[in-house]
Image (tube, rainbow, N blue to C red; front, side, top):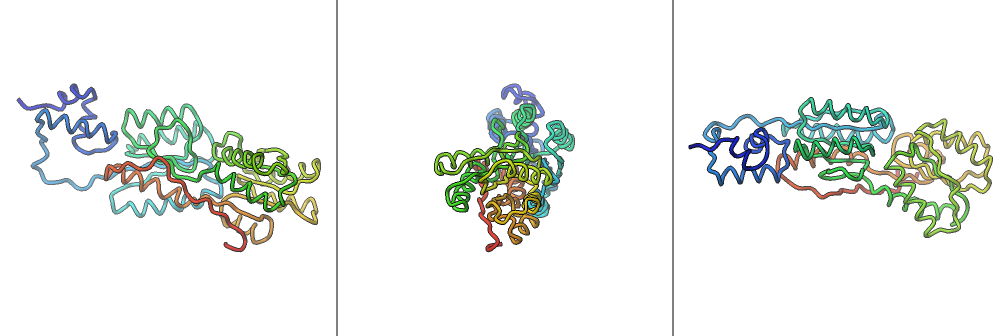
Length: 340
């Protein structure tokens, strides 16, 4: 008597649909589970009905991409990397569906994930927020639906991802501390400006900077850490109000957006000698700030690779069964006006 898919499902302890996907290589199932099912089917003597038929046209795979802070300047390079990957993977019958989230709304990101699931995605690349509900949803996708998840730009703990692609933000903060020590001559006061205090990325940068300053450069004092919400007007206000109330500030680190407010603040204060400034992300505007002398160093996270590489990793997982490294760090690039 012929072995049925249901019998294999009962023996494997999975659903009939899971067995069908494993035997027909339809993705959306963990590779190790698929291999277990195929091995069990062979042991039970299952005869695949489609083996004698001509091979069908190559199956199209759908990869979803979910971003955050879609309007921020650092997203320009990330989006360029995503677009390039979409073109590169098109000949492999892989479709890329992008859902941009303009902000850091948990609800908006959850809705974007749900929309992609309705589209029937086979893999997901995401810049996740640090949210328990998002973490649980992504882990259910991995465990129950077999959809591989690759995170990029923001690495949130507790997500069962296949790989993270992005900068070691804590280490970049330490690099910024070393640069600030050189710029300030190892003494003075430094103001730190971030965006939202819920940002995993920028919190890591700030933590790395503060820890390295305290450990290696004790003569540099941290004046404070203030949130600007990536708003140039708020960056300007923070710098002006802080420098008018606290003397001796000779260094400013801005780990987020709103960098246009830096130069405006210096103009408003009418400074003869401005503080030394370190900013993040190589964008056209930030390059201009370096050239115009509003900033001294820029730390770039290689956004193009962050947008491009995750989609190729998903392709390798689903098409070739390759297991990626858990982390792929992008370079910490130090940029000045002289190496633009």
